[in-house]
Amino acid sequence: MNETITNLWSIPLLIVIPILTAIVVNLLYNRGRAIRAVSIASAAVLLVISLVSPYGFQWFTGQPGVTYDGTYTFNANVFSWKLSLEYYYGPLQQIMISVMSFLLLFVVAISTKSLKKNFGPYIALMFLTYLSAAAIMMVNDFYHLWIAVEIGSLLVAGLVAASGGGAAQKAALKYTFFSALSGSGLAIALALILGITGYANITDAINSVRINDLSGMYNVLYVSFAFLMLSWIYAGGLAPIHPLKSDVYRSAYPHATVMLQTQSKLTLVAIGLVLLRMFGTLPFAREAMLSISILTMVIGIVMALIQTDFRWILAYLIVSHSGLVTVGISLGTFRGIVGGLFQAVNDVIYMSLLLVCCEMVLYFGRGTSIKFSGGLAKRAPLLTVFVILGTLAASGVPPFNGFQSELILIQAALEQGLPEVAAVILMVSVSTFIALFRAIYSIFLRPGDELQQGSERFKLPGTTLMFLVALVAITLVLGIYPQLALNFLTESALKVVFVPWVP
Image (cartoon, rainbow, N blue to C red; front, top):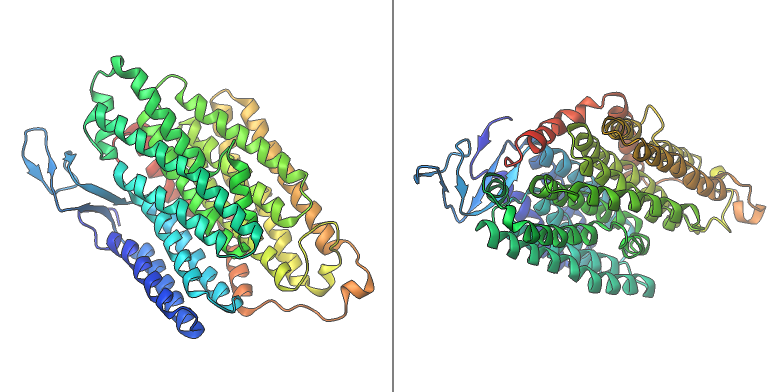
């Protein structure tokens, strides 16, 4: 698995299969059984590919790299300037895309079972959302990064609008309007970087910045950093754009939000690492990234604490925990980057667990408002257990996975002489528990009236039960054996810190 292969076979498949699946299910439109079979089979194939794929590059257009002496090479182990558009699949990409593929498999299984009509286009949007996130994670050139971010923004709006209802369509419209700034910022950053370095390839542009004297171009570098950071903020939903992103999370079906929040986390990781690798040595660059991250954590958790609806609470917690991911990346140290990447993996897992639990509350015909709910624990005891376990994982309580990543982030902050950042991370962890348990008590544990409680017990659908069990198992396994994930992340963090021009 450690060999570096040029023109890797799996990378085109991870891009093409979602596109073909989207076309097929869209043509099938409302043929439920056929759509279910095609979508589950495609998601399973994507999961297998992501797990078994070796590591390597895909050089589109087949152009070789140019070495120092002017000769050409197709050998990825030889340093060269890449003339072609490039994708890279390594340990970081493997764990991120594998987790996303696993979530996609169960999300399409749940959605094809729960939706009743016109869900061919809806499932198509789901697969294309997966495509955009996978492309953002693998891409190693600014052109494809710009295209993937633009496509991803449109797909988020489409997936939310497909959830139906005036609120969802309004949220989608607002997000479409403002997300255009994300693509525009990335396009301007691309133009400036291309003008400074002459390279669209991210690796080559970073290497050019580091080996050439660009002291007279600092103003241009800072402007390109600012526009790329603007794209990072908009695409990932960081402060001050958090109201738009939280509205998207709340308006979509909870199972769709599983994919939306996963796409956001992968985007934050991918663009954040580019920012760090390319501009991390600029004065105040990491400080600016860290400030936005802390602001996102604080605002998100404060907003979650004052919400009176479980869906809104989860929406703002997703935003707040996005700040946890970017805090680690913004610290720019080996431990900080590992903690941020590990937090991204853990966050999409336990937030998916809580979102599926929220979907089951709606499935059982109960509202998610904490003002009028109550007594659900008696009728759905198993669901109550799952939502409590998800809360413990999200709150960083051992032995769940959230504890391990948050502990690494706290240690990284203390190593950098930033105890105030460590205190904010701890505050977010405690406040997450308070916000979630307040909702759990109101919806599940608080006694309801006899008419509201009823006598019939709610039974979880088989697919959903399997998904919840798998997610809980993953949170426990990664909490007890974090090295299973860290083995994939440490190599990528080392490359960012010590060899910044290697993908």
